Image (cartoon, rainbow, N blue to C red; front, side):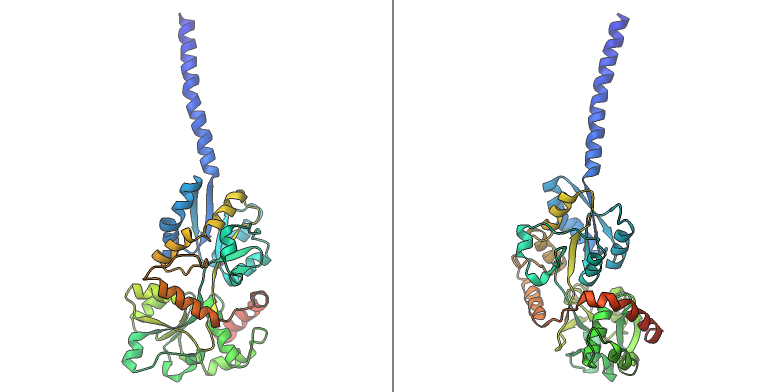
Length: 353
């Protein structure tokens, strides 16, 4: 009897253990299907977490966790774990994406229907592709301009207009793509180009320099400085202008006649990541109209896929961006990234002391 009892107990314990073992196995399987996506934090992170990624997670039974940070932060994290990648896909500003590719941090993108939809100008070599389109131009404080009776800016040369003394807010060339873009366009007006920035550095202290109220590390401070009536003029993207206007901040975008500068957000899969198939699947999904339509409607991200539908609210934004892109200047990032450390040092030494 006792033997029977103990056998029964053993059988029950054995059976009870089975679901636990199965549970542990499924938990570890779940743990294996977490993908990590590096991208900008804040509103962009919330937009993707709430509106874009759930459809992919549901269809593929995976969890996508966003690792937030600036493009420079994400690049540094991926570089630090190059031999044992922790992330699977990353979004970077196009200039920094060129650096990531040259450092061997990106895998090659596999062909997909959505990738084939993206125009050639949205692709970066074989490794990366734009997920959203943008340009850096000028933006201005409409309240200040109205009060002073100033007409809207029309040229990058306006940064040197004496009317804006102590009213120009400029992002630091050393830390910001906006700052770099603004400086390179000013340098072109002085007769320089991407291989010769001396004319820009030479002219800056006597022209644009006296107008600069503050050199800022990122654009986050701009909304506050517009509201306090300190900032009149600053380099910015139409997308960010839209975001500020939605918060009731008095700003408008001004397309410079010399052209704005292309600033796309691009994606790549991380080289040698531990989920290569799923990572490619996620990268392909993020290029589809299914992913880009909510990013446009809920977050004003201009889609890279021309098949993405628009609404009455967003159609104008997309059409305007396509118009800006027709005349936009594209930076030779391979060239710029090689010499940028020298420019950063020169900038810190002579401009932003």
